[in-house]
Image (cartoon, rainbow, N blue to C red):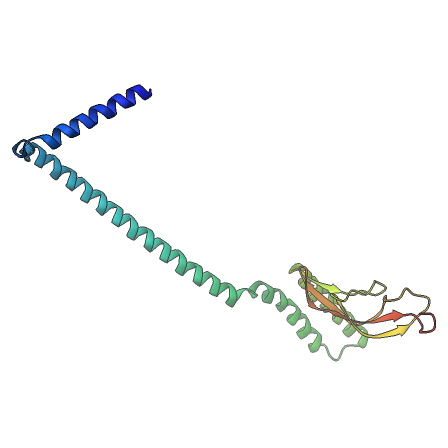
Amino acid sequence: MSNHNESVLNENAKEMEGASSAKPDQTADTPENSENLADLLEEARRKAAENWDLFLRTRADADNIRRRATIDVENAHKYGVERFARELLAVVDSLDHGLASVGADANALKEGMELTYKLLLDILTKFGILVINPVNEPFDPIRHEALTAQIKNDVEPNTVLTVVQKGFTLQDRVLRPARVIVSKIAAEEA
């Protein structure tokens, strides 16, 4: 294969030498060469026009995609909580009904508040918002905020005794830590 390539290269080199040593009148453009060059030039211009058109269309598509993405991001920021807000409307309706029945007995009011509270927690859970209620769990400084410590010898130290205010997480992120009272051992035992 390499011998064949070498022979082709040698032939091409000889032809080029012959063309360069030819007399000027022999290399003059003939009408045949002129037509061939004109055709080649026209073909090159046509391809350049096609490529320019393709470039312009691609750039316009990219601009449209960029513009559409910007609008989508703006709408996501603006209306991202729409689904959540729609779900909360049921809680508002429940509270309206409860307030309308103020003349009812205390037991009915308590029942209505419990149902509204359960409805609200269900909606929060549906959107990945979970309650942190760590009674009798070990204290976790990431998820809990210790308000004070109480001496309790019958409980492991740093155990949550009381939850003053429940905390909430959104997926794995803490929205608000639970405010808690933790246990500690007496000073003389320490």
